[in-house]
Amino acid sequence: MTPLELLVKQHAAPVMKAAGFKKSGRAFRLTAGNGDQAILGLARHYIDPDAAVFEVGYRIVPAPYWEWIDRHSAIGNARAPIAFGPAVLAGNAIPPPHAAHAPDSVTSFRERWALREDNGLSCGEALATVLRDEAIPQIVHLLDRSNLLQECRHPVLPVVRLVPLTRVEILLRVDDASHEEIETLLANVQLTSPQDDFITWTRQRLTARNSTADRAGVSRQGRAGATRSPGRGPGAISLPGFSRIRPTPRRFWLHRGGGEEHSPGTVDAVPGGVGVVPSAGGPRVCRLLVGVAGSVVPVAGAGAGADLLG
Image (cartoon, rainbow, N blue to C red; front, top):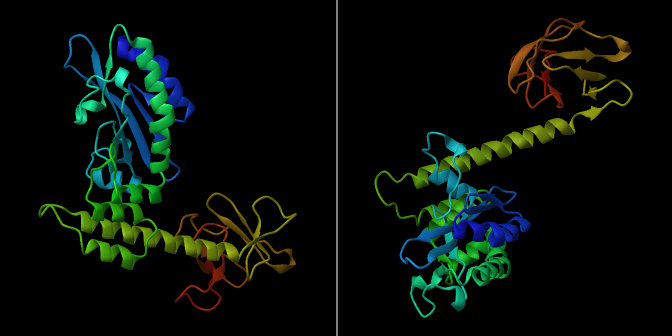
C-alpha cells in the first residue's frame, strides 16, 4: 500500500463513510433519493519526486444530466459517473498551508495537497478536517437541486460550473417544471453543432414524463373505483357491477350477487391485455388497463354488457 493509499484508508475513508458515502478505490460516491450523485476523488500529480502531490475534487452529477451524457452508451444505465468526469458542477477541497504543495500560489496550484515523509499525520488530519467541515457539508447542500441551481447561477470558487447555465436550468427542472417553462428555456439554448440533439432529447423526456403522469392518473382512478372486500379471501377486491373479483397471477374469477362464481377469464394481467370472461349472460370482452385493482367500464364497440377490467 502506497503512502497516499494509506492516507486515504486511515483518514479520508472513515470520515466519508460516516457521512454516507460509498468507497470505490480512491473515489467516494453519495447518491440522493432522486438519483443525483456526488463523487469525490483523489487525483495524483507526478510533479515532485519528494512528495505525493494530489488533488481532492468533487463533482455534482444530477440524474437528468447523466442520462443526457450517457444516452449513447452501449451499456446504458450500467455506466456510472466517475471522479473528475463530466458533471454540472465541480469543486475542490483546498488544503491548509501546512498541507499544500504550493501554499503561496494564487492559481489553481493552490488546490494541490502534498504528502511528504515528515507530514503524514498532519496531512492526514488536515484532510479529514477539511472533508468533514467543508467539503461534505457543501456536497450535501449541492445535492438539493434548488441549491445547486442557485450555485450554478452564481458560482463562487472553488466551485465551478461546467455546463452552460440555460442547459443547467433545463436539466434541473425538466422533471417538475411546466412544459411551457421548459419550452421558453429551450428557445435560448445555443446548439454546439448540427449533431447536438439536446433540444430533441429534452422534448422526448418531457413527452415520456407526461406519459408516465397520465398512466399514474389512470392507475389512481382505477384504484379509486375498487375497494378491498374483508373476509373474502386474500386479494379479493370489489368492483362496480360485481360483488368482488379475486385475482390470480394471470386470470380473474368474477363473483356476482347470490354467490355465483363464473369460470376464470382469459384476460392477461398486463396493461392492455384483452380476453373473454364467461358469464351467465354470455361471454364478455375484457381488457386489463392498470392492474388488478381498477374499475369496470364499458369496452368501446364491444356491445352491451361488455366489461373493461382495470
